Length: 326
Image (cartoon, rainbow, N blue to C red; front, side, top):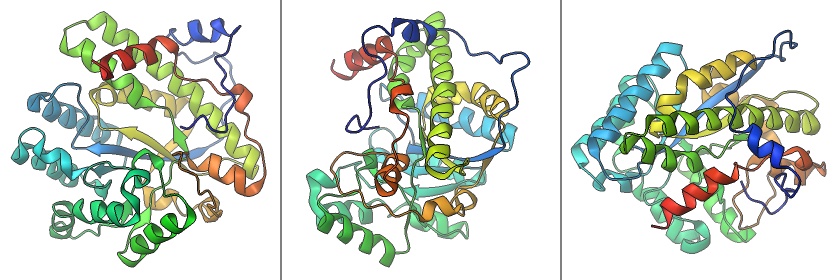
């Protein structure tokens, strides 16, 4: 999520919030039941994000993630970067995509290289989208399914307006629908520190990061639900951005518990998108990648409760930056 419009919650004097983030999440006895809501689970960057290029680790991540999704009967969709297929073992990377389809989940296009329209321009970006369907389109057709969903990397949709309009026109002409994001808990920032802990055998550290992640995620889901009520006076059918990582494979039980506490039912993306909220105009033309509640808040001229928003806990951000820069 961009910081362009939000007020940072972790300013001076909010140390208690940071410390609270390291406590395992728990249900409050006697707390009123949350209103019923639905959420579509979308996983970006298939066939997986991993700290180090270890094919066995990626295979195991996908197997475990799909097994837990099956256990809970959660529908999901995976957005693919075909450029990742040749980063490790191509045949086994493709096999991971086939696992998703065999498990009953659809695949979507996330571009070939995970590039930005800001850097590539409209035509370069469109070429990257087209290159990103060479494997998954025939794969989906073989399974008698239609490749119809596209997710913008970084949630950057094109700037200025002429670039965005050109990309939108191409997507429409080629049968794509944009998959928006209305819950984003920055799971990617936790994922690399978690990989580091798992790969080095530090089980205590892995458990700590997982607990921080789940606690932060539950609070952030609550913020998005409050934001939706500000904009629409109700819960919408949410679309949650997640990533294909070991963190999420190992956290699916915890995420399922959160959905149960929050009275949220995972549904297919197509079903979530039937909510009239998704007909709200998206007039945002900036370069920052912002999610759709931010976009709609601008269109509707309503302020989101940014004073209540929490950034990712600083120790997690610092560890992520350390790993990402080494």
